[in-house]
Every structure is written in C-alpha cells, then in structure tokens.
Length: 279
Image (tube, rainbow, N blue to C red; front, top):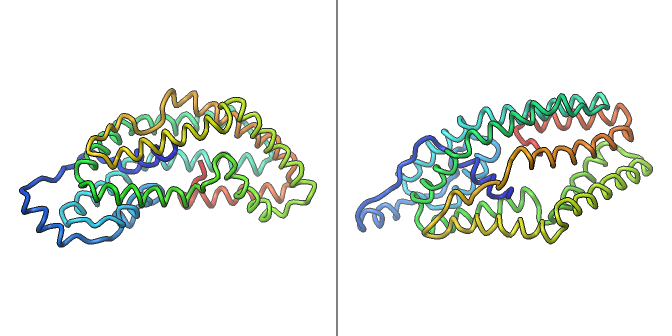
C-alpha cells in the first residue's frame, strides 16, 4: 500500500472548500486554467504531490485552495517528518558504532507510528475534499502524473528493486569482492525469508495491484477515502518490517570496516537532513 500511503499523507489539510457554481462559471474559468507546481516551498512527499498537480490545468480559485492544502499538509506532517529524521539519525549512530540496539530504536519507531495514526483520519477527510474540488479530467491528469512520479521514485522491479540501490552504495563504500559476496548472501537469505513470511512474489504483486486499484479509484466520480492507506495494525506491520531490517543490519555491520560504517552512517544522515529518508 505504499502508493496509497504517500497519497494519503501528502494531501492532508485541516479545512478544504469544494468548488461549485453555474454551468457558465466553470466554462469561463476553465479558459484561464494554468499549469504550475503547487506548494513549491514544501518538501518530500508533499512536494511530490504538488509537482503532480503541476501537470493539471487549474483555475485560480482551485489553485488558491490547493496552495492552502499544501501549506496545511506541510505543517500537519512536520512532527511526523521530525520523528522519521530522529529515527534515521539514531540508526546512523548505531551503524557508525557497529552495533544495533533494537530496544533503543523501538521508542522512536513507536513515535513515527503514533504520529502517522494521529494525522491519518484528517488525511482521509482531506482526500475526499480534494476529490470534490477537481473535475474528472483534472483527476485523471493528477493520477497519471502522480503514478509516473511514484514509478520514477520507487522503480518498477518490485521487492528486488533495492538491490540496485545497494549496489550503488556498495560502490561508494568501496567494498572488496569478499565483502560483496558475504553481503549478497545475507541479502539473498533475507529475501528468501521474506518470501516465506509474506507469501512470496505473488502476494506482493497482489498487494501492489490492490494499492494501484485504490489509487485509480480517485479517477472515478465516487471515491472512498477509507480505502486509502495501510490496512491492519500499523504497529504489527512496523514490528515485522523493523525486525527484518534490523536483522539484516546486524549481519551486515560486522562485515564492514569502521571507515565503511562511517561512510554509510554519514550518507543516511545526509538523507535525513534533506528529508529524503529511505523508510
């Protein structure tokens, strides 16, 4: 459900006014519709949604509402961003030290989950408002643009996509052939375990299909915001994911030299500082 989670988080707002009017009014306003990114000063996923809206011809009244939406979303999710940054920096510190302390990370993970749960209901309400604001052609243009951006951002290769990014990191760390071989074994073993836990690639594809189907529903005249976002207990899902990631880190860190751990930690800190946190 990653696609839908991004959409749900980034269009949050505390208030939103849907447009109305006579038949003649939209026709007149449509002639003045323009394309330009919304929320140019925002960051992360909020900025991604604003850029997708930049592919949509918007009337002045719509743009005013969407600019407020972007500003409210940025403010609403400031705490969530701070929590993710704090978690990333804590992980970076542990990577540099060469020891993973699960107990120390757990309160920070719990904070991120709690922050998301706190804003999620308002995000769902905002999605419904946004759907009411845009007409059919605008919704189609928005979904097309957002799907393209998410595809570029996350890649198309499913659960194996991370290996390409890891190869780039391996080059930056200047891993020896022996180190690459050892780490490859750790990652392949983790991938096999993941197949067993989550039903294999078929279940992964089914989840992705369901996520895409929910996003596609934004195109329709009827839209159920309750269908958007992660399903099930967030704490349980986070615990499963964290256990797997931490387990990989515990096996990989002893393979790295202190200098290599420092490079990896600094890279994560840089990502955290820029808002491009990889989780």
